[in-house]
Amino acid sequence: MPGASVEFPQACVFDAYGTLFDYASAAARCGAVLGPRREQLNNLWREKQLQYTWLRTLQGKHADFWRVTRDALDFALETLELPAVSLCEKLMQAYLALDAFPEVPTVLEQLKAKGIKTAILSNGSREMLHAAVSHARIGRLLDAVLSVEEVGVYKPHPRVYQLAVDRLGVQPRAISYQSSNAWDAWAASAFGMRVVWCNRYAQCRERLPGLPDHEIASLSDLPFLAGDA
Image (cartoon, rainbow, N blue to C red; front, side, top):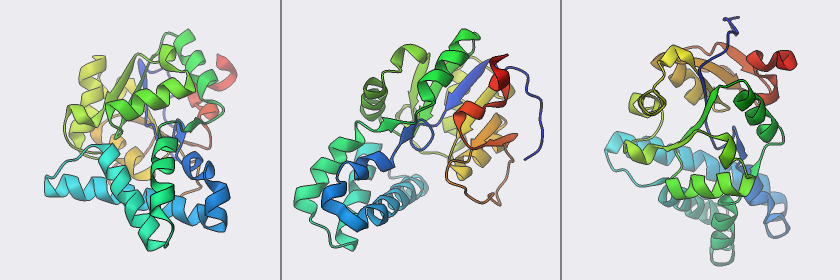
């Protein structure tokens, strides 16, 4: 990843699911029932969840992320022949209380101490994001929690990234955008933001417009927090 300047941004904007919150923790809470199929369910659920956001945006048939997440789960449970009646509601409720990655509170504390604005920009509905932020107890560390529901389309549509610019009053290159989703990181870069790709899942680089400025394995490795200077 190219070595861009590590000067302090005016704002740090974070993707939510997979970046701040561990979406795999929902399936983990039902691990006793899912058994060896837990990882398979988690991966298929996430794959269909993302596919449905992209397809609905292309079709102009928007539905909020709760509906999309439920539809994706229904598909995954049926495909894997798992008991939907007993599992669906448990898994959906678990999605409202996802675990934050361990470094998240400390990183947000460090950013706030430096006077950097912090925000979430997510596909999640307002209610889903409020629940996740409340469960993780990080609300006081965020200046804004932005849902795509404000623009009615999903990432990677440029209107989503423009929402952060408009709401925070900061130009794109003064924003550092953090995402663990490679396609999201590349899209934010193509939009004009400075981007840190938090490659938690050892993904390959995308072949898409844009190129992140930095690649890290954990948010604690943010380049402008090095040494907590």
